[in-house]
Image 1 (cartoon, rainbow, N blue to C red):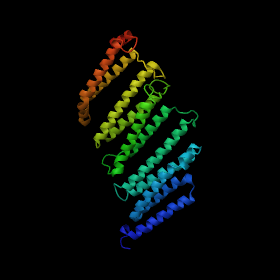
Image 2: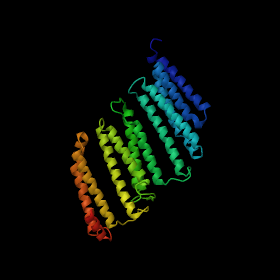
Image 3: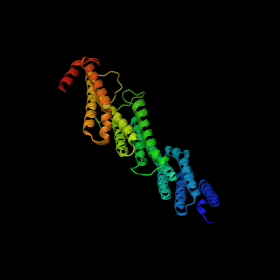
Length: 357
């Protein structure tokens, strides 16, 4: 056959062989190991694609990766982990993720950018994250000795998604297709949504529908996992992307700044109210502290805008007037309310704090 790479006959035989291989795995391999078995087939097909160049092998590798994902989310894997088979589930998911990464590497050697390679690596990241989530679920249920509270569990899930996103974000001058270009952003957005909806709204210890109680020492507690750590991951993503993807980098920097501000405000709230922060009232001294926080944020924004050079400094200067002006105006209003006793009793304490600072 003169050109086997573009031959319909070769494609037909290759697809038939792949179907038989899929059927063999389904028949001979136990349900709890099929995720790894299909990921192994994906690697075999991707390696053969690199060696032989038959185009049908790309479809076969992609099909095997899809079957690996399907079995990874099946009741045999997830349900088995919940029923006490966590180690086996983690083993098969970890092995499957490694094999899909290897398959992605083999497919990328054929052509770059390669949608097949990007899809296989995205599947590997998803399986790895699934393993992390199952482990967190086991810890949250008390499997490690002490159960996690819902706030910490949610924070760890969000951070895991963001960490997975950093594995998938594009590097400078890296050639990627559509899947590769978007997968990191999708994972990062899912992590932000997890933190915003769960930790920021539902479980927020101040205004949440089911407010969490935050124990532990100041600064080093669940609030750091819920807001400070995601803020750091977002700032890191912005730093990585700013040179070649400025618009997403700006969005991540803004989201990180907002999370850092929420973390600082909740730490202030905890300093005045302890672990139970859902009380409806605000002390005058506490209100003054919020005002000083906003004033500090405005001053820092203006200072960075003046001192930072290059494109980052230009971006900061573009928003400096609005952000710094708004923060200072709102901070001044909060201080004024504290001064006249507009929050609660203790106006004298608030006034003394303002004078001292």
